[in-house]
Amino acid sequence: MTIVLAIVVFLGLFPEKGTAFANQVFGFLTNLFGVTVLLFTFGVLAFLVYIAFSKYGDIRLGKEKPQFSTKSWIAMMLTAGLGSATVYWAFTEWAFYYNTPGLGADPQTSAAYEWGLAYNFFHWGVSAWGLYCIAALPIAYHFYVRKNKGLSLSSVVGEITGFKSKGVVGKIVDIIFIFTCLGGLSITLGLSIPLLSQGIASILGIQADFSIDLIIIIIISVIFTLSSYLGIEKGIKRVTDLNTVLALVFIGLIFFIGPTMFIISNSTNAIGLMIQNFVHMSLWTDPIENSSFPFDWTIFYWLYWITYAPFMGVFVARISRGRKIKELILNMLISGSLGCWIFFGILQNFSMDANIRGIVDVAGSLSVDGGNQAIIDVLNTLPLSGVFILFFVVLSMLFLASTLDSASYTLAATTTKGLKDHEDPTPFHRLFWCLVVVLVPLTIIFIDAPLNTIKTAAVVTSIPLIFVLLIMIYGLIKWMREDFGDTPAQVIKEQNRRKKTSKNDDKSIS
Ligand code: NM2
Image (cartoon, rainbow, N blue to C red):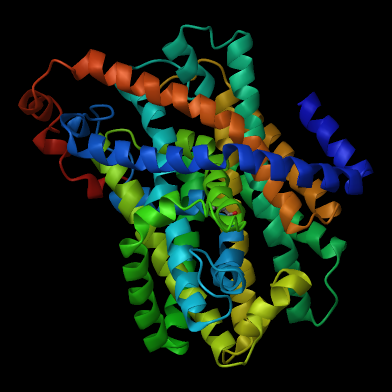
């Protein structure tokens, strides 16, 4: 806590030094770790696919019936894992790639448009969800199959390495966890609060400023503090359900009112381009031209997902009791990616279409204000645009609330030592973390950090976590081999078949 405060105060007092320092660190670290990150992400995906289809895929994470219906479970995964910055990227990401495309395409050409969407799908696809999954799986295995205590990275690492989770090593892991979470949330808030302010300012016809940012943060804090206080079933799940329904209505309306045919054809095309080039995109380092694309985007994105991975890992583990390993892996990889592709397919194409037809200069606006005004202008092309902008603002707030909710829940779960199965952290703990989660982003917004500084937060905070993840992967393999290495596939299947009475998991709380 003291360290977090010290950094926040430093950034608040010396915004320029903080930004310059952050930029230097960003350049150095991305170069050094870039290739490792690409290999790690690709390796993780291959490992998960192997586990899902091996005999280990049939291991059930706890013998009980799943606590949530499959529908709610997937919705919770999606809305916790996607924050409000997702809404920002959904309108602008293709335009960044259109200006400086990957895989050597020429900038601002038809090919750059096509690659723009393919790259967007790639950065929000199976590799990315694999990074979430690789954090969730060892935690869930530790908690439900091994029945160890503690729903935190430090307790998992403690069980694997034999170091006491209450000792120095455990503390270090907890600190890494907390930093990574706050790093990820800072990007989310740093990108989305200014966008929300712009939206509200445009509805009210006023100028966006820090006081609007502040009001937005206060409103969101009230929503998520309340729902976090109420706990997962009464609070988080309700916010999530509302979030999902509104997101579906929002994209559904844009799909029908917007350029429907273009959305369908360009998304289909992008899926094809991405699948065809998947391995190359995964391992592309641009060794001859040395363009900054792999570092600025693919590597940045994997690290960005890794900042969310620990809290997603704890959260997904918490909601996945009673699921099979195969079910967990395939749903995270496939349902997760599909959710992203549908959301992005509709919104990216909507904004790309406005750019192609020359109605809004989305690509040109990125260097002006990061594209915030262009997003509002794109929404303004719709009939009843005021209503849409309001809808957009409410939706982004819910996305944010549901992410902050699960983040503060997991931060509380982490700092509660020896949390047992069926137990939640105390309300006091949860409230405390809600406060911290609000304090850090406020500083980021106050110093008005540019995109590169915000990106640095992701890179710097996520690197130590890769080491923690490696330990967790090692532990998972060791545990599975100890527990089931000698058990024939058929026996694992039999042992993990759920009893008839609890077969219908869609009848569980939904
Ligand atoms: N991802 C890229 O800020 C957000 O919307 C969260 C984070 C999924 C790790 C997106």
